[in-house]
Length: 580
Image 1 (cartoon, one colour):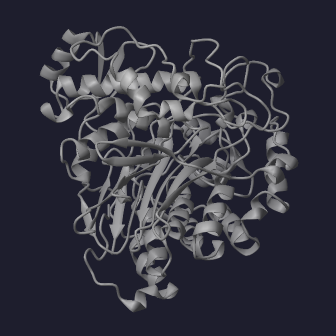
Image 2: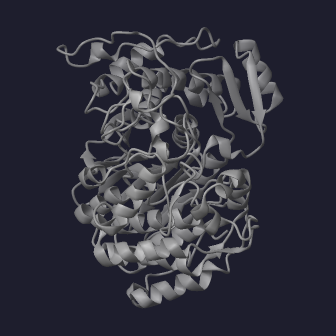
Image 3: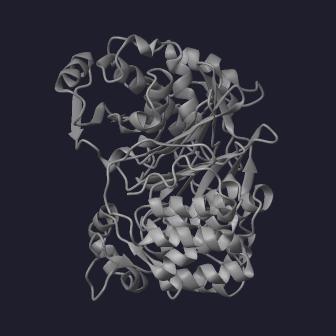
C-alpha cells in the first residue's frame, strides 16, 4: 500500500502538466503492493487520504495539475467509486464539509439520496426493502460533486473525471479487503447480471492481486465527461436508470431524477477545548452528535487517565450514548421536521447532559434529553419522549480527506448504504444503485418515509479548526460506530497528544444506545474490561484487533506551528495517504 508519493519533494513545474501528472500516477496503478502496514505521512504542499491508495493518487494527480482541494476531492470521490465499488459510486449519495481558506468560511453540501415521488409506506407490502430495485432512492452523488466543483473548484468535470475513467478502463489490482467483501457478497453479486459481469469471471470471484476492470462504468464516466454531470439526471442515461428500476418494481421516475438537487447548508458547529468543530448538519446526525459528545466531555479531565483505561472509555461511552439517543429522537430531514440543531450543539445543553453522567458507574441507559429548552421558545417540545433505533445501519460507507497548499480542506463521506447497495446495477452502465430506502422509519417517527424526503444517517465528515484555520480533517464509515470513531480520534489527538496515525490505530469501542451491550477490539486489555464490567457494563463482546466493523478513518492533521501536513490511513481498511 502506498502511503507517500515524493514525500517532502519540492514542487516541480512540469508536474502541473496534465500529461506528466497522469503518466506519473499511471506508472504506479498496477504496481502497488496489495497489503502493507500504515504509517504516518508528512508533506507540505497538499495531501489526499482515502480508503484506497489509488483513489488518493487520483486526487494527488489533480493537485499536481494545479487543482484545489475541492477539485482533488471530486476526482478522488469518483475514483474511489471505481476501486472500492462496494462502498460508494455514481448511484450513491453523501455529504461533504468544505473549508475555504481565502474566505475563512466553511460550507456543507448535502447530497443525500431522496425518496421517489411515489414512495409512501403503504406503497410497499412490508415497508421499504433492504435490497432489490424497490430499495433504490434518487442518487445524489453526481449532483453533490458537481455542485461542489461548480461553486468552489477550479477545474471542469471532464478534467477531474479522467483518473476514474482510466482506473475503470485499464483496471486495478484487487486488494485483500475488496477480495473479502466480494466473497462475503458473492450470492448477491451472482444474482444480478450486471454485477456478475463486473465482479465475477465465469461465476468465480477475483483474488487479491487480480486485475479488475469495469468497462461499462468507464463508458458511463466518459459520457458524463462529454455531456456534463446533468446527463446523469436527464437524457439517455437517466432513462436507462429509471427503466431498470421500474422494470424491477422500483418507484424511481424521470421526474425524480430531473428534480433532484444537492443542497448547500450551514455546517453544524461546536467547540472542544479551544478547537472549533465543523460537521455535517441534518438530515445526517453525525456532525451534531460529535459536537454534542465532545462538549459533554469538556466537563471531565480525560488526560487525568490513560487513553485506554476504564475511566476514559466509560466517559466516552456515556457521552456518545447520550448524543446517540438524541440523534434517534430528534434528527430527520429539516425540510419535513423541526430539528433543534442549536439546542443539540449548545454548550449549555451539553453541560446539562454531562451532569447526568456518573463518573464511576454505567448506570441505566440514558433517555433522550430536551434540547428544546436551549432552542427558540416558539418551537414545540418533543411529543413522544420515545426513540426508535434506525431500522438498519451499515458499515459500507467511505470517507476521504483533502488539504491543498493554500489551506483549503474537504471532508467528504459518501455511501451506497449497504455493501454493493441494493445489490442491483443498471445494465450496460456499471452503475451500482443505493438501497437508502431502508433507512426510513414507519409513520409517526421523525424519520418516517415521505415522498421526496431524505433519510437520516449518522455520517460525520468533520473539519476541526484551531485559531480559525484547519487543524484536522477526518471522517469514517461505520454507521452508529462513526461517532465513536471520530470522538476516539479527536480525544486521542487533543487530550492525549497522539500523532494522527497513532490516534487512528488506537483500539476502538462501541456501545449500543438502547441496550447495555458494548463491543471493543481485542487489543483493549482484559484488566480494563474487568474494570468496565465492575462499573456496570455487563455485556462486553470482543472483536479482532483491527476490525473493519469499527470504521475506516482517513485523516489529515495540519501542524499549527510548522504548517506540515500529517496524514493517517486506517489499518482496518485498505487506505492510503499521498502527498507531495
